[in-house]
Length: 301
Image 1: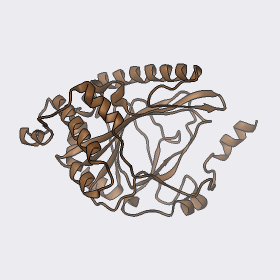
Image 2: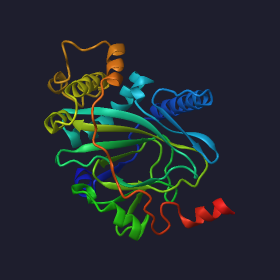
Image 3: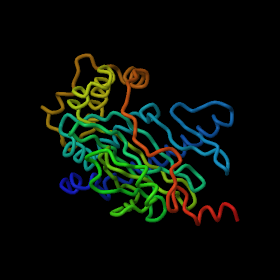
Image 4: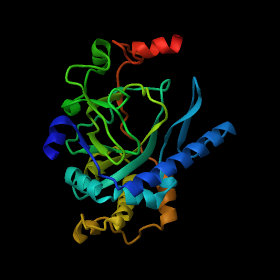
């Protein structure tokens, strides 16, 4: 699996998250969606939530910073044994979680995820984005598409879009089921076409990187990094299968560890510059791209 990840830039691992945690996060997603839509109706905004006015009405796109809403439940999710093992294998024993968001992919019409690379960096250490699926992502229904092996350098995204649309040579669709995870290198080229089926597909995303790489790169605020190191220490309290040794856990222990409420508050308040994603030229169109022709026909009929 690790060799496959290093070669392709992504890895689909089925049946990673226990069913009870998937059901808990489905319930959380329902609650956050209802709260976000009600706040939008009142001219307000749920913290972390993004609600947009689609042609069919207001719909939620995402809810960022999940630690603000269910800190301990999120920590239990990340510490799921099979997931935690993959984090350690791919990022090393000093890996830390730096972000966690909940994304809602709604039925078309809704913004598509065009070809892009998440966080271009020259650092060779793995920088991971891990999708934890709460709902099915079916083939030809907006599941993730990858161009394997594109994680090593910046791609000419605009040319790929213009020439090939959703189907450049070598493209791979990666469907997933609830409880599956898809781990991707932040540099691998990927996209997601419109969702055709009814309802929303919910995916929890966590971003993971080694502590050393974050410090050495010099982009991120050091206080911001150290707060996430403290957060990883809280996550590892749920490592019931001792995937991390006591010595490895000691790296995350802090004599001045903030209380939970203070840590959550600081995680939100202490900001840092981030690496922007790389997209193609704005409004580039290609064959059946970004909206497939048969969906355009439905919209006008």
